Image (tube, rainbow, N blue to C red; front, side, top):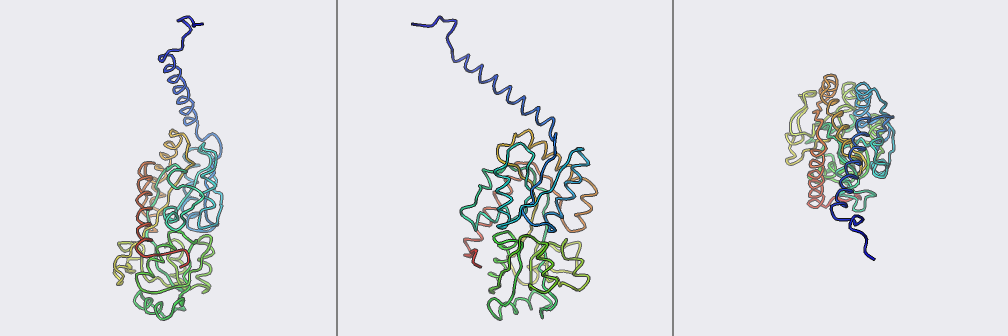
Length: 333
């Protein structure tokens, strides 16, 4: 039996229903974004407390609280070179209330771990690239070296002679350090930590010999004579330490490493919420007190859009994959 024409569901009716659903869904998402954040936001730090990521994101959280009147709380989930915390955020409810504060290790891990517990491009939504920063090659003053040339000779003198500390196996500092030793023809013994806090304490105590780390963590120890800075890893010298040469200037052509910090949300987080959080992070990056604080450390404040961060990390992943392929660096190094 045929239905009366007035009861038929035509393509136009279907199109109208879909359009209405999309309109309602879009309005609901926009409404959620307008009220965001309506409760505390947790920023997951995938490293142990007391490290460089906490140093960076704690002032951001404080500024976000000041700007929005809402709570932004740091929570620490260290382990596996930042994979534990990153995977936690990738699997979190995509509502903008659980986000990730990452370092450049985010782009290094895919090159060394083919089977990550998350996809760095598909499982997390980019929010904002916040900073770019150079690191320092530092040693304990007990080492009989005062510059990069002497360090190279010392490191080459016996395999495994240098105990080199990293903030996590498979992280960007580990990968770039392995590349550095590959370039100079030396084999270190890597000692991996769950963050830079304990690593720095052990460096000062002389339990490890060398590290590539941020100026933030060691300038005071350097001034006190507890650590010795040999070079900066950036393309240019730091305003903070103008007397310290770059690694390239010191006779290692082709070695350059600048770290970075960024924020991510779980994939599927409404675009309106991601964009609102990105705009708030850009405000933080432009705040005069933030610019001054990190500028003194030689950091460049960015505050990018979500798309700019996405394109940046894709390029960084490709760079590290080429580096691994060209040098044969493995996790066993």
